[in-house]
Length: 358
Image (tube, rainbow, N blue to C red; front, side, top):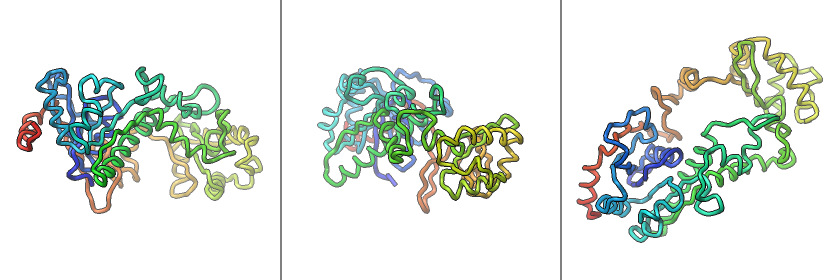
């Protein structure tokens, strides 16, 4: 889908290279500028999964000759992504102002936790911190301290995906207007923005109490422990799905479950369901709800997920790694290999010279 688009990615951690991997899997040519100081030993594929499908050139951006090469890459590119702290690229002479002078059509994507401006802009932080300050972490878990969600929520959901969307919007705009732009993608921004879905619930969503809102409080929206110690997820939000849920359990006429949207009934109903699900192993409940719209599925380990009938039928995993997503009709996307650090340096330099960018 992005054939013919060239993205220059400056080596970073977490969400920025994830966004680069996504763009590469969508068909863009992504050249990652690895640090020359990273060592000469080829990196193991499992340690550099986020580089799959990219080309690699190793540069020392404090070296004048290598800096010249970096500027040549920028001249040749449609987009640039970086995930360094604010001010680092400017100190290298590769900030947005300098880059857009080199290439006025460039879409310059910046990935940070706190953003390019604000009191915390230059401070360190991690996924959990950005979620906490945005307010999103407040709703993680039931009553008591918030539970730490996986890094997918902040780094990937609120970070990498917003950077990727921003880059795509910028590329479309550049194609239409001939003008580049700067994309300021901050995890704290994305995490706050994602809460719009919860806030859209209005009175059904509490902003002051954990475990008392429509999605984090009810007995029909949580995980339960089964007799084998494994967990089962339940989230039958709509009335018709809730009715199916009770029917499968033989509880349709039980008055304890007659008011699913009344918060005062949730605690007692939860206790009842804890007892019910603790009476049999996970496999029993998975079989009981199989094929229904009751919205009940077991909590699987990543390894177990690979062999799940739905996951395996769709080919969501390719060996030890997840397949590219999303899918496009009639297009079979195969991720490229993970490059060794700097393995494409000679070919990239030759291309820049041939095209007059060096």
